[in-house]
Image (cartoon, rainbow, N blue to C red; front, side, top):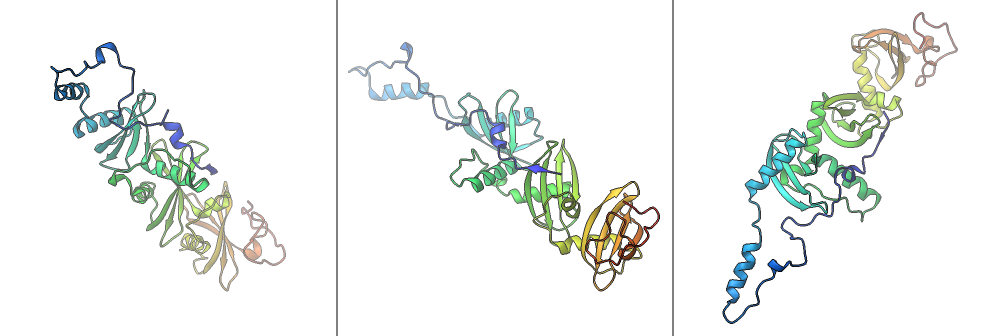
Length: 313
């Protein structure tokens, strides 16, 4: 579950991002047939200006830009139905760079390489934030400016829904890239414990923050009380349902199931063993659970007792 910040996303995508303005013309030494005839008594200045205008290519129309951007978005496998497009300019490698907004989901900045490369506006915003946190004077490269692309929190909340985060999401952020190449995110909930969630190969997975903590990760949007509340919901319907959980931790898992410890307000704590469907299979009071995964850590237990049958981690 380790991750690293994707601070170099833009550098990986764009080959030479000294982008010239869209209508800038390359300065060249004039060829013989490009040299304008001197303005003589028989040639008016108006005629000379008309000749210059005739040699300057017309700027592409909005429709032409959108059509070209759609072609690049399709070739880049973005699944983006382009609703708006902007030609940003050209790189030193003479590739064109577009910003596109999509009918559904975040937009992209796309470079017309072979094949085209594309990075979405959410990751570009994350890159900029990361670089500027390290160096406020850093140039993060091109960023999305089309109005439809600027509300990155909206897109991140949509990602959380797609990942199956079933709570009222009030905070979301990009964490970075996981070791398997997926992109990690964290979601905080206004009414429950949050999650890490990941997109890899167009598939989503999610991990409760209590598990993230057990695997030495960090959830900045989830409090210990919210994790305790999560375990309280797992105990519903079991013999430990009356436990007023004030602290909780995920201990680990074995072939028999997954084990949680719960500290109970005003009562002895418990260790709960759940199956793969998160249904409680057995409850062990802390007083008799010293040999299950090292025993309870949140509740002070009496001297060692005999280990319950089948419960040792």
